[in-house]
Image (cartoon, rainbow, N blue to C red; front, side, top):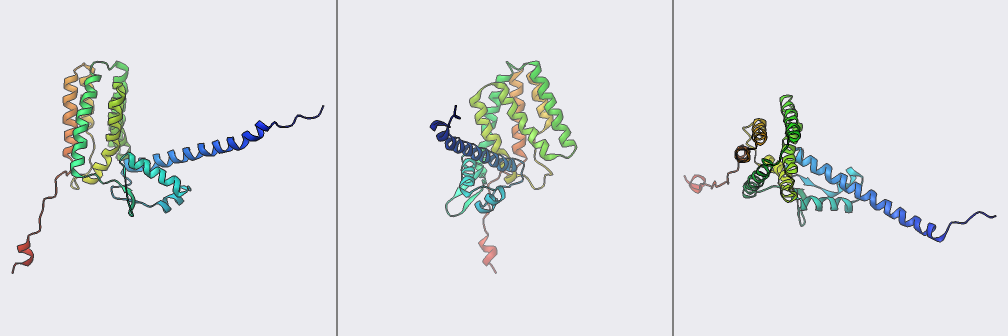
Length: 248
């Protein structure tokens, strides 16, 4: 009996499988580059206003300009990058009013989140949060600011996840992602660092453990107000003194 020949379907399927494999590889590359640029912004390695030039970045990541442009568009949708005609892309620079609005939104959303948690959090979750705070405190104590800042942000993110409200969690995720930009743009140069207070995080957990949702919300409000207070969010209302310029 002669050997069976490949069927037409098998032969025709090979190019389709190759194309699908290529698409999958490109999607993975796009996701990886998105995450790397996003993390560089969150880690304060890319400050507001940094130009993101397509050609050097495409060469650096070993991808086409078209793929890189897709990444920059995704970052623009996340409001981490600004794309301007004839000026290219750059890391977003939030305004003073936008920064104030961001903290106002965080206070409203995170107050609601801890309000929900006060009625449903369990002992296992409390233990997990305390372990997270311990790692956060250790990172800052060792001078590992990048790791500490990431853990500080993660604390707020985990609270939202535990609350189980996907809408609130989604809103907060966008605000948390943009908060490092605001801190970079407006941190007080006289301060050594701008970060969450770990003690406040512990006090929030203490209130949640006793089921006092109102107290947890109050502490969260004050906590976010204190973080905003570390920033220089004052409108520049200075004017040029013409008399001083032209006076004799």
